Image 1 (tube, rainbow, N blue to C red):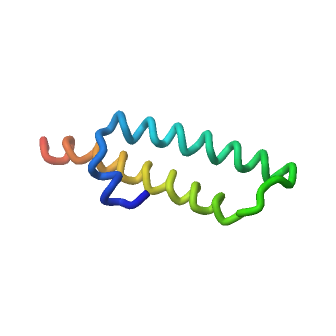
Image 2 (image 1 turned 135 degrees about the vertical axis):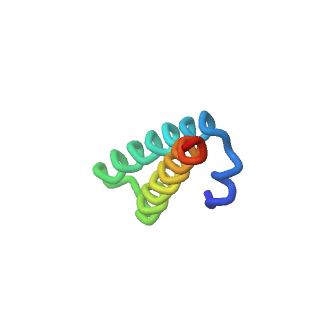
Image 3 (image 1 turned 135 degrees about the horizontal axis):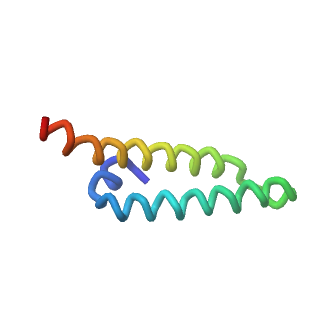
Length: 69
């Protein structure tokens, strides 16, 4: 998921995406532990997606507060 796609989402949608991505990451980590993962690069992609989502969510939450001051 790209930054442009994420910024188009609302705060609630971003929070939902974070939960979904973290659940997928957990499943991938469990599959990695049991040796069922063939595409290990997907773990890195999911971690970066979570970071990207959280960064933009934080920016959206702090942006209204900064403009009010």
